[in-house]
Image (tube, rainbow, N blue to C red; front, side):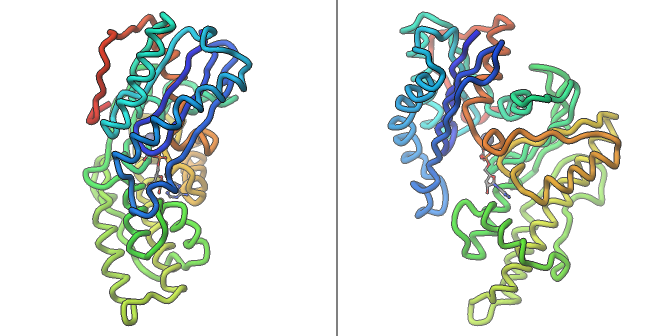
Length: 335
Ligand code: KG4
Ligand code: ZN
């Protein structure tokens, strides 16, 4: 079965072609980061319009790279939530209309299910069951994955997502949007022990997270260091390093707890924050300490992409799932 995947939930237009026998045939991601940078965050209306502009040309590129035409498709999968409603509608309308014109099935996919299953696109996919840490700009969740469609939420952030905390802390330090990668780069030249950032909610039982306190701690630390409102470069780097270490430690402590409580020692990391080098290293050590292993999708499949949607959609279509012709999206949608 060959399935075209469309991801348009936020600020990336992701298009991919997945073959249930041959694997990923081609994929493209167009990031709108430059478009939103001057506003310091994603502007929903601009995001929708840009998806309209980019989706069709990217579909053409993907089909050309795979040496195929639309008539070779057996199904279409599109992200139908959660996300920005206008952005989701672009992918959903395009997906459903194409499927109708081609007389093939189309299916809406949960964005987070896509992230959860992204490691299955790699050469050595983890066996079920595994624990998944989803860390993106919109979500921080620990999920037990027993199989396709069998997900149990173990814990999640009660306030800001980890990526959102990175972005907000970075903004306070005057770093460009999106702040996560910029803050992480700055942290390389900082001393993470100078400022004692808290590790929120790690001293009580449970697998939920809270990152908004780190934001407040960052603001207070900046105010304490700044002279006439200006931070010295080394102070900035030390704050970045302290902040990053706190987020990474907190995530690692909860991952270890989840693995111990479930007895499952395979851990997968998905979502944009999964690109963080320090987090990767820490979680590798964590999994090894439990004689387990940690799995990452390659960086371009860690962030939003169409391949994960094509994969998740293929599994559901193969299982016989079908959807009605009506277009509907679900901007807020628990997993
Ligand atoms: O999964 P993603 O591409 O989009 C969604 O939010 O769905 O994740 C984007 C998030 C942003 O908050 C970005 O700052 C963060 O991932 N991020 C990072 C790094 N690379 C991306 N955070 C920390 N370190 C990084 N290297
Ligand atoms: Zn995402």
